[in-house]
Length: 124
Image: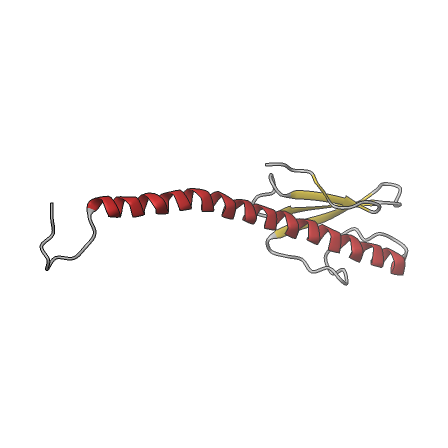
């Protein structure tokens, strides 16, 4: 089918090719974007438990005992997106801090103790 010289526009084939290209780009870009979000959540939780550890060690250095809660610790700010808690060992000589992404704790949970680095304990 030929267009009259006065008519302008795209053919159906050209439009379908453009839609196909956009679909392929979306199929590639969306999983990459989602994995970046997952990585950002992991990094945020890891940073939060590491900051909590630093605050707990500072409190121990000042007071001589590990705190039983993270609330109100100088140097640690709680977040709405991340839940964190501390468990002090029964002998009072160590602790474990657990942090998780509030909306997806099953996939983004980290723990850290007095002598180690943050370790991911939940895997999606």
